[in-house]
Figure 1 (cartoon, rainbow, N blue to C red):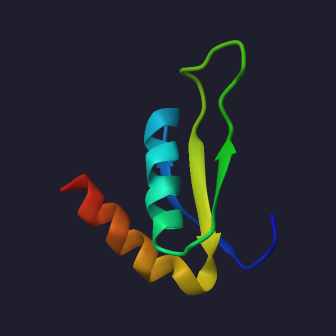
Figure 2: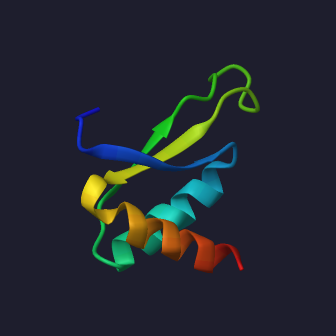
Length: 68
């Protein structure tokens, strides 16, 4: 991962990561999902969402808004 990408959210639910990625894309922010889950045991490991450093504050605000 390049240096200017920042992890803004971690979950163990792939559907939630995909929803957040779509919301960020709808707001003109590129997001990358990094799935660290073990393929044999889907419940082990995390799924992380990264955005470029200049989008961190806006992205975190949108995620917080989505969770409420």
